[in-house]
Structures are given as structure tokens and as C-alpha cells.
Length: 228
Image 1 (spheres, rainbow, N blue to C red):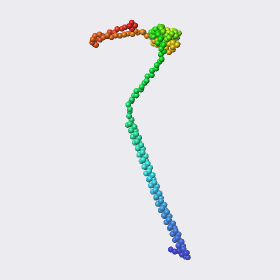
Image 2 (cartoon, helix red, strand yellow; image 1 turned 180 degrees about the horizontal axis):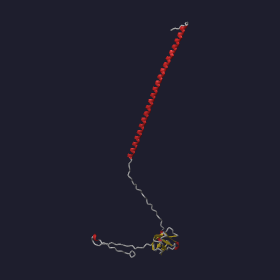
Image 3 (cartoon, one colour; image 1 turned 120 degrees about the vertical axis):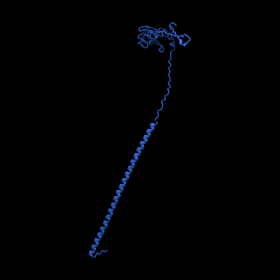
Image 4 (cartoon, one colour; image 1 turned 90 degrees about the vertical axis):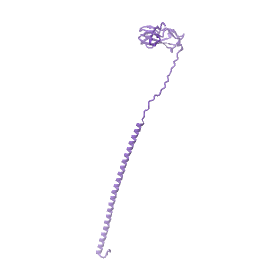
């Protein structure tokens, strides 16, 4: 439609048509934009729902894998405990012989100790009784009575003085040691019995009479050891 500007009415109509046309175009554009907006909103919602579904699936798979891992670890630990319990074996006790070496100590004995002679090497005393073992020979010619050293091992049973006189104090047995100042390594022991009866040795002889072992008669003869 051509609009003639020399006619006012026609010009007005043309203007109105242009305005309507412009307005119609704008309305169409707005409708298209609204449709696009609606489409984009739907797409966004779909995308959001898809993302949520993917996330939920991933979480579910993670939970399943974690459960499988825990179950497998429990099974492994159970197997390990079973193997340890089954592989435990008790070994028999074995005794290892221990070699013991006996140490022997050698004590150097003064050869002059054999030169010392005593009249008695053992005394039998009663409580309060006194006796003396007489020294018959000394270690050498340079040793005298003044060199004698007497010592009792248990003064509660027997005591001895510097001259060698031994006195019983109480019932029991002990030793008196004789040594010398110039030979302290020589020690002569004298056994002292206080309150102990000196019993003689008894020898017994068995004589079998008869040829048969069922008719054995035993005859015992006693002989005083002092008279033998």
C-alpha cells in the first residue's frame, strides 16, 4: 500500500498502519523470546534433573564399592585368623644337655707339714675335762714351743690355750687348729669330741652251718678292736 503525503487522511492511515505493523513485529519478537525462554527453562530443568540423577548414581556406586571393599577386608581378616589358628603347632620340649666342667683347685702344701708329729689327732672329752695333744716333732729344727699357734674352730664346744691344752665346754664336735708363726701355711687339725662316747670297732663274722641253704645258722663273734 502506497501512502500519499499530499492527502492528510491517507498519510494518517499510513502512519497508523506503520505503527501497527511495528507493534505487531515487536509483539511477535516478544512471543518468540518468551517461547525461547520457556524452552531454555525446560532444558535447564531437564539438565538439572539429569545432573542430579548422575550424581545420585555416582553416590550409589560409591556406596556399593565401599560395602564390597569392607566385606572383602573382613573376609581377608577372617581368612588370616583362620590360617594363623590352623598353622599353630606345638613343638615337643627338647632338653639340651649342659656340659659342666668341674674346676679343681690345687693347694700347695708345705712339705715340712709332714714333719709335724702329734701324740693324738682326735680327743674324746667330757664337759669340763682337759687334755693336750703332745707335739713329738716340729717342722724343722728352727721351730720351738714359742712358735706354736693354737685356735679352736668353735669355742662354744671346746677352747684351747696358748700351750695347747684343750677343755670341753659343751657337747658336740669341733676342730682345733695347730699352726706356727714361722710357717703360717701349715695347719694341723685335731678333732675334738665333747660328750661323745668312744665306741670300739666291732667286727662281725657270719658262719654258715650245714650243706643246705635252708638250714643256715648265723654265728656272730665280737672282737674288741683294741685287742686285735
